[in-house]
Image 1 (cartoon, each protein chain N blue to C red):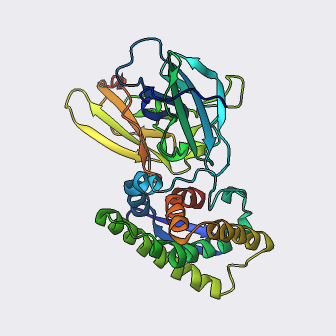
Image 2 (tube, each protein chain N blue to C red):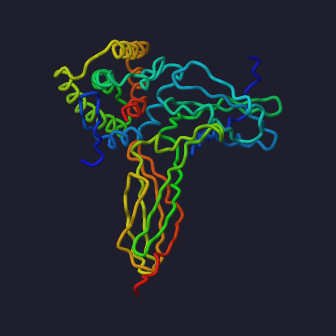
Image 3 (cartoon, helix red, strand yellow):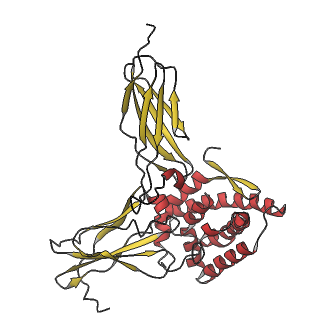
Length: 215
Length: 152
């Protein structure tokens, strides 16, 4: 294919960074090369015999390429590869390790909405959605991708600093027997047992229980 | 016990220490897959994906696959790395117990083999025989997550 003489140092650390199955290929510039390096990207489905070029990532000078669309079938596994060009020279193709979207993605924390009564707090948890090709397209919750998905919920009494932890499978949790007129802060994490995946904890959402009307 | 998962393969209900197997495989995945340079051939997923197997055939395919891994894969996966070897034998032990449990269920005629599962497994064996024994075994081991993903 009229390849140039490939003596340029190789791109480094070619790897997928994936969050909620938004799968972006990242790499570092070849050592010792300043500005002006261009790259092209190809990918392949593991077990299928051909490499496919990514036109939107041809002759680019950035060091990332979004392959979410090309790797959206999480029942498949993938490789991707990058080649560098500078002043008529090129590097070798540098490959990722085998990428399994199902086990190699990171998951965002759940969204939380809370409400309170005098003595209880109701917490509604929403798992993030899988990366979606187009906003109009049908959204898929990660709950559908990982049926064993659970939520770890932390509830903190701001006054006494006492904290409780709950592990729930469904997306609602009511915490009873709380003190009226007291501030509580809630944070939650997603936990999938197999494959073993967990998100970080969300930021804290605080709310006060209503004051005791009889007091 | 903690980390055990109950699998329903048709009428067969089998429990397996999935968390342990997954953790063991995750620990050696990069090492094993790096030993498999062949991108263009898969043992389990091409040309027919495990995910397309009908639920009525799940039990028989699972029975064949556990036999396949115990009889044809693990024993040919010796490496020079003792840590990797320990992880492989731990996974093999879990598969051995699954093989026995599924075998008992199969013997009670509860794990019927249809035409599709016979075809599918024949394809897997053909893919396996397309390589020399060691390469085929290492590739099969590197695809363990494909099997585990399908089981779940």
